[in-house]
Image 1: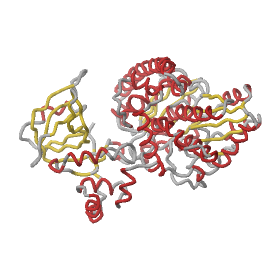
Image 2 (image 1 turned 180 degrees about the vertical axis):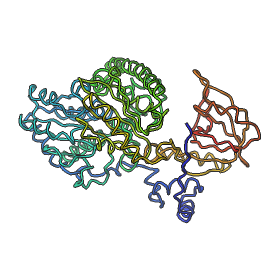
Image 3 (image 1 turned 45 degrees about the horizontal axis):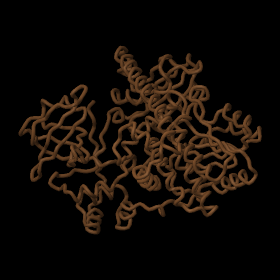
Image 4 (image 1 turned 90 degrees about the horizontal axis):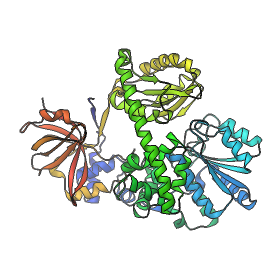
Amino acid sequence: MEKRWVENNHSDKTAIDRLAGELNVNQVVASLLTKRGIYTFDQAKDFFRPSILHLHDPFLMKDMELAINRINKAIANNERILIYGDYDVDGTTSVALTYTFFKTQYSELDFYIPDRYKEGYGISTAGIDFAKEHGFSLIIALDCGIKANDKVAYANSLGIDFIICDHHLPGDTVPAAIAVLDPKQKDCDYPYDELSGCGIGFKLVQAYCQFHQIDMDTILPLLDLVAVSIASDIVPLTGENRTLAYFGLQQLNSNPRPGFKALMNIAATKTDLSINEIVFSIGPRINAAGRIDDAKHAVNLLISKDEQTAFDFCEIVDSKNTERREFDQSITLSALQMIEENFGLHEKKSTVLFDASWHKGVIGIVASRLIEKHYKPTIILTESNGLAAGSARSVNGFDIYEAISACSDLLIQYGGHKYAAGLTMHIDQIPAFQEKFEEIVAASIHDDSLQAEIAIECEMNLAEFSTKTNAILKQFAPFGPGNMKPVFISSQVQLASPAQLVGKQNNNHLKFSVVQQGSYAFDCIAFGLGNLKDKLEPGIPFDICYTIEENTWREKTSIQLNIKDIRIQS
């Protein structure tokens, strides 16, 4: 798939020059900082040296005082408290964090995760009935509930109170809970509104500690859970999230809880985990428990106090991840074949596919896989409880949630974000939905959104790169949305060593080295670009866009350019 190179040309030469002088860094580093809104020495200091003191006062969040007062009342009256969360990584880490902390303060509590297939996303009637049957009078809902107006009303009728801790967009009215903690509420003045669900749970715990004058150091070990939620839920790595992720990664890499230690061992990850490694190795395994079986396994893993218990639950979770991979691969092949065999789908601006036999737990992953091949808004539907349940994924710049909302007359239920959503409809409505959704997308999507793009920060002459530059670039981490690993362009480079095909399975990757005028040779790895091998010839200049990484081989570490794309001079 040919990709557009989109360079961030927003730069203030005067500001860059001034910052480069103040920090004694080169123009490339100063440019990267200004593009992140950093213009002064003090702002740079805060960026490069995160501090726990940068965390906001949790009582700035609307309803926080009400939430703490209700928890205090429940504990004083010996009420049973149920910690309730979604079945994905953000939900299970939220539950693990909140349950772990409050279990140190109070014994009369338990946790509940809804069954993805029997109960669906969010607050369920079955969950509330479970609470009533087992004598719980307070439910703390995490990573869900902001639109559960009817379910909260039902709980109220049974004498069960709710505290909602959510980070999704509210509807026109919020549920009639005792407290609703969600910084995305229009009347909430909290300074940062991009926390993960687990981040909201941490703010609740932080507020409880603040109220009871419990030392903050006692809850810092919980930040490993927050870091994993931030990485897996793909929330921005800016502001408070960056601080939480920074210290969470420190905890994860220095003293991981038994559950994470077991996951890191079974996934054979390196010890110095980054956000990216969490996304691809730790997160999918936690997610797989709820996708394939029961997310309670994931919570039990994360709250394990000893290594043997953690190992036992880790084996269960990892086996579910193996099943998830098998479903993922077979359904992706089936969906791609469906597209290949239906030429009409090639002409459309959207992809909406249905097969009643597809496993509901992986349809979101499959939607993402299809976008890698056919870059257009994609919805994958399967049968669940007699209805069509779907997962939607979008492309850059297109709001798929808004497009689905425009089809709401055909839907039973829907929810989500700009780039990911879920929906349910009657099976006989699928053809009408496919037609209407395509009309909405075709009428509103910009042509640029139908071509994958590579966001490039700035051009760099390879001769400008130094060990000092690399040391500073490493301090830009943790990387993620809002603070992505910088992608650079270098023009008119030439081969310093021939391109070789590499790759265990399909030999589809390239290894080579390049030089640019005045530079030494840089080793390069280009994943998935093996088709360009014969076009790379000695003496023929070409342009590269890439990230910079350190590659360790046989205990020797060297700089390597991770090539994202190549343009050969015509």
